[in-house]
Length: 482
Ligand SMILES: [Ca+2]
Ligand SMILES: [Ca+2]
Image (cartoon, rainbow, N blue to C red; front, side, top):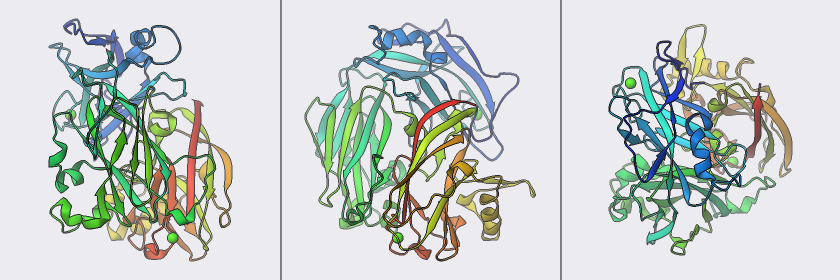
């Protein structure tokens, strides 16, 4: 149930108990009447873990608040929230997901019903959410969900800054937005976003802010390729917190990290970097971004929480991995859509990894090989382990098609692990991974083009870096108990 190899402490295993009687009544916030309580012992060498479970366990008494008219759908003026609860003092602290720290609660609607039914809690040792407050190898957390009356909307603050929320209240609530690519740019461009808290000044954003807080949304495909994945959309769904401000940026023909090398301020990034300009009606729920590159993106403020594909794509701002750890003991059912624009014949497959870094455990030496710190001497062993029968996901293997021929097939795969892609390029006898240090040319050969949509670059050394040499969309549709 816990990700990254963490275990529950036998002295304080997971339980759901009555909320603290010390908790003061809050006129704006209705707390659930039970809370989760546990202590987790982290895997040595790992400082993070997460767990996902049915929202009923920490939100059972809230469902009638979210849907007072029993329509089956969350009401537009009712928002979810999440709080840490200090048992001894009754003090509650907001604990909604923060993508920069990687901690907090995220809500999901995994069945597409229009009502959230799942919560995924993310923890880092010693950070907010770890009630012991120190980096000591354990996470301690009583917490629960809540409902708040509020009606969020979009507010354009500056041409580049969109505030999302109900500005009549300062309570933290979970808001759900989707960003969908509507048209591609001429080149392969990277699109990212930066969230500012309600008190932050959008006019004082620095390059350092961008590098420390910016998150990659997706890359756009070069328009000329016009490669179809059928009905698969290139989009991402995000949870943000009430009254946060979102700025989106585009880097042309490069990545932000590459552009920023040796630079000290935003202006020095030059014409390959720009913040994108919003168009939105005050108080509406839809906005557009249009770039002079040809790129266009639509943002929607949604009433219901992100779905199954969003849960599984949740780490894709960090690395091209499928994260199924929240759904251990489940089979995941879905379909693959894939197409290519390349002369080389490539085959993509997926292998199990321990975390978003792509780590693999070597049972022979007892060591964990982490690609973010992989020594050259360990590269061959990493590649051997990755491609071993034990680690390969047979249901997601053998993904290959002919040039510009859309292909599709259904799959069913076990949840509970991370899956990372690899490619075998038959034409050059090369094998590539999504982690640069695992590749003999030191180049990353996969990019995310949308939630669970992977783009392969098949040329040794990166070649034309168009990442459309095989485009693989993994569309998760449902899950069921094993
Ligand atoms: Ca701790
Ligand atoms: Ca290429």
